[in-house]
Each structure stands twice: as structure tokens, then as C-alpha cells.
Image (cartoon, rainbow, N blue to C red; front, side, top):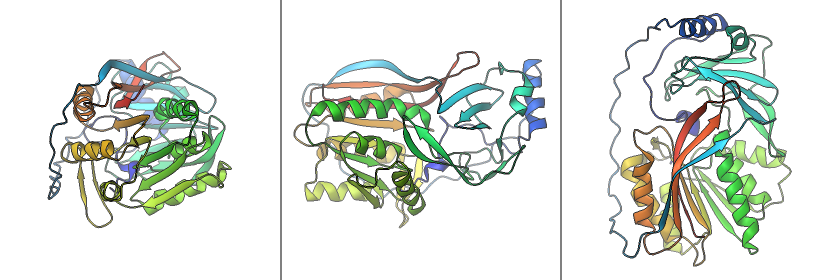
Length: 363
């Protein structure tokens, strides 16, 4: 589905908030929070119900013993030279992306900032405008005007950061724990491994998989995201690695792969809460996810390694997707591991939850 991923990030839903976050306003907000003064916010907008998906896949509950379970599992990303969550609070987060310090909205940061206001003012970029997940905004550059992109790294992989109008920058650092886990599985298999990356966005997971020795199929409905991912492949020096870039609706792609008999050893899928495909296809997480999960099981090889599901921006517990994954993989053995992805803050050591996840692991 066409998610653009930059429309759907930052944990579970929060009321849309209008207004900029210029340095002076950041200072006021931080100081008001530290002094215990309330901040007035506008009322949420009325959302329009999305159009339902037609002709859903007919599902039958799988037979067999349920996989073992491991929960809750909290996967944590600590500050490092490439990325750090410097501080958070008052509905904002202060981050370090390579050379740049960036301020962005963060609805779950309901505590008070630990760093003084002057630290929040000493930044290179601030996202302002509509802070709703689906809302457009813009970036302010308090020091020097910056270009749209800048070079970044993850574990030695070079890629491009980008200031998008939906407040995101093209990488989601909390996913690094999934990438590391996938890399270990690929290297430990000591055989050819095929990876399918659905809703693949800018391709960091695909690049990690390819560097680890896998043959990768990367699917995203956004031509812009595919183009960006190809640029990242070149920057990472992996142009000779076997990555197949597919610009298509994710559900249609997996349905066709099932008919064709195509099979994969590892499947990653990171769907939006809501999205539309290039031909108007509708994705609604709670309606569409069971069918996609079922198809993902069907297109696994006879000796699969893992299936990893990450869910952002939903009002649900990880127990919901845990139960779905455990039911879907009944009779397969292995273990369902479920919990949350978190980023550890540098200033006060608090953990900021970003998303829910559930993964089936064969061993």
C-alpha cells in the first residue's frame, strides 16, 4: 500500500496540534513544563472515516499447536555516534542525527525535559506547522539554511537523511534492533537467504539484509520512496548487491507471489495504520493486517527463519498483534516474541516507546 511512511510515524495517535515550534516557543514550552504551568492546546480535528476495503480474504483459523511465546520483550536502542535521543518532554524530542541537532513533536513525551531550555534552542532544525501525523508542516533552520538532504550513517552504512514535510527524516532508529537480529539470522543460516521487505520505505532494512548476504525484494507503493532507496543503495556502496526494487501495492504483490509460488526465508512488514495504493487500494490496519499476515505465512520457504511485524500509530496493545501472529503461525513451531521498540534517552535515561512489534522466529 502507498503509506507514505513519512505520514504515519511516531508511536500511537495523538490529537493534532497546530502552530509552530520556533526556538522562542520551544523555550517557553520547556520552561512552562519545568515550572508546572499548563499548556493550552486546540481541540482535535474531526477525522473522516476511511473507505472500507472490499472483498477481504476469507480466513480460516490455522490448526496445530501454538508457537512458544516470549513477552513482553523490550528492544532498546541506546545513544551512539550516528544517532542519539538527547532529551524529550513537553510534547517534543531533541535528537542528534549525525552532525545535526533536530527538534520534532513527540506526543508520548508527557514528562518534563531534563535539559535546560538553552540546550533546546541550540539546534539546527525545528519542525513547525501541523503536528498531526497526516498534516503538512515545514522545517525552520535557526542557524544556517540547510539543504533537503544530508549524509548519514548506520553501522557503517551510508545513506541520505532528508527533511520531509511530514516531520520525518528517512530513518527510524528504533528499527536497528530488528536489523541487527535479521543480519545475525542471515549470516548464521550459512545458505542462500531470500528476504522480502514490505512497506520498505527508504531501504535501510533492505541494505542491511543485502550487506549480510541475502537476496532482497523491496516493495513500496511510493515511487519517491523507491527512488530514495535506490540513492541510498548507491551511497552505501551496495550497487552490486541483489536487491529487487518493486513499486507496487504491498497486498497485491503478496497475493500475486502466493499465486506464483514465490517463497521467502525472512519477511519484514511495517504497515501504516491507514494508507492508499497507487490505484486507490485501501489499507486499514485492523481490517487488512490479518489477511496480509496469513499470506506472509503462505509464502515462506519450507525452512524459514523469521517474520517480523512492526505496528505504529495504533490504539492497541502488543498483546493484540501477538495473539494474531501466534494464531497465524500455529503448527509452525518456533517462538512468537512481542513487545515494544524503545529509544533510550541520553539526558535522563528515560525510555521513549515508539512502536509495537511481534515476530515469529523459527529457532
